[in-house]
Amino acid sequence: MNKIFTLSPRLANQIAAGEVVERPASVIKELVENSLDAGATQLDVEVEQGGVKLIRVRDNGHGISRDDLPLALSRHATSKIINLDDLEAVATLGFRGEALASISSVARLRLTSNTGDEESGWCVEAEGRDMEARLSPAGHPQGTSVEVRDLFFNTPARRKFLRTERTEYGRVEDVLKRLALSRFAQGFSLKNNGRVVHSWRPATTQPEQERRVAQICGPAFMENAVHVDIDRAGLRLWGWVALPTFSRSQADLQHFYVNGRAIRDKLVSHAIRQAYQDVLYHGRHPAFVLYLELDPGNVDVNVHPTKHEVRFRDSRLVHDFLFRSLHKALADVRPGNEPSAQDEIGAEADTASELSAQQYSPTEQPGLSFASQSSEPSGVAERAPSWSPTYTSAGSATSNRPSLGTSTPVMPPASDDESVPPLGYAVAQLKGIYILAENAEGMVVVDMHAAHERITYERMKEQQQAQKIQSQPLLVPQAMAVSEKEADYADEFADIFVNLGFELERAGPESLLIRQLPVILNRANVEQLVRDVLSDLIEYGSSQRIQQNINEILGTMACHGSVRANRRLNIAEMNALLRDMEATERSGQCNHGRPTWTQMSLAELDKLFMRGQ
Image (cartoon, rainbow, N blue to C red):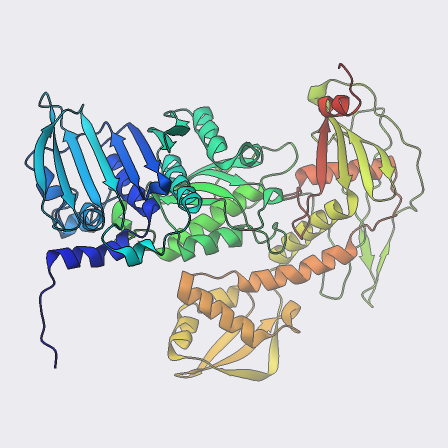
């Protein structure tokens, strides 16, 4: 039997380095976070050969005193926490006291610092071979400089796992971009192989912050982003979310920060996906730069050495807050209506138009119905006739709508731009598919089927919610075997299932009975749906799966009940559709996430025809 030995400091630090120091990018992350914790307002990063040969981070922070310099390279030595209370409410980026010791164990490290109390600074050096710190005087302004040379020089096996210089530099650049997004008040610069690549000045105003976001995430992101700022129940969410039409093929433009710390969290990702569920094209990923601020005591950052993961004290509250905030912000994005994310989160969304007196059932298909609008100026084509579908006992839809004929395009009279609605006025229909309209900026092109599909879908959801979910009892209750934990959660969250039309009864420690289910889900795989909901409740504290399944069915009904291609509309009907789009939530995308309209400005049209050149 092997004897138990105490690890040597060198070996212990190298084991810790395996968790903290993976590659040059992780070294830069730790060093820059230390600089931010030291109150630096300017941080300059320099790398050579992707950071393998040299990493230099210089700041103008508080500095480290001469007596503390050797201790700074010791393991579990930190100025950021003292007792358990500090650990449970960490407000700094670093706190573990492992980074410098781990880095110095696998590289040649030189740390020079000046607190500003003395004319010159002091330098401490250490190499992985002997781990002995050597202290000497050195000229340095207030702040700290850290040089890391020959990374993994004493652990060649680790060095073999590094990628090419270009790949490692790309990761260094990504890390610094994330850090630059986390702190707008600080200035950052990056130099690669002697050449300045990035220089971001401090950004204090919102336009300056948006300029930095555009520099890092690309101008196209900011051109398609919505600014949000919501403060509720001790939680604040602010930042920018991209419109659904600016989706990505991969999740490469997603930045989320908790109290200034970049994180990757399953609960956060799930809440954001739920907020985009109704507007994102299949297989696409949303883009966002978001900041969540909350009491440090309500989030545990001591989950993993890399500090990329966190644990919320009240995960259900955080999940619900993120989902509702972003869902409301995205719902408010419609033509001519700037998002008002500051509105009461729990408030009901503005209705697209008056709900029809008729009720939808799973077998009913709505007819084409555009609400009359009073915003049309006098002299424009006649108002759209007010009509609604009438359902027979057999469930088929008939209509008192007059017949639709081909109309001659009519130009609206000239008027002030201020009186022109956001989508303008219809002038023609193209190929029975698109509506062409003129607004203050130029020309608007609308996919009439996609637009009407969204309008119909939103109205059906409103009606379904207003009527509450209709349920039907099962003649023979459906039994399902579950784990004891799942059964406990079914009891605990019984009210959620009841509100969504389900009645579950616990038949034993590991058994449930489904006694009632929503009428609209009578053909769904109900047992799998219940299991998925319970899985979400266990993982995230909430679930939208039942509502998603209901919405999918309503979406299919809306698609079949919307105006089809080659359907000829007159000018009044086209204008009524435009007004409905302006009043309907999420009308910028159809139910499948495709755009419903696009704008071509007069300048863009002039450019096409080389006017003014």
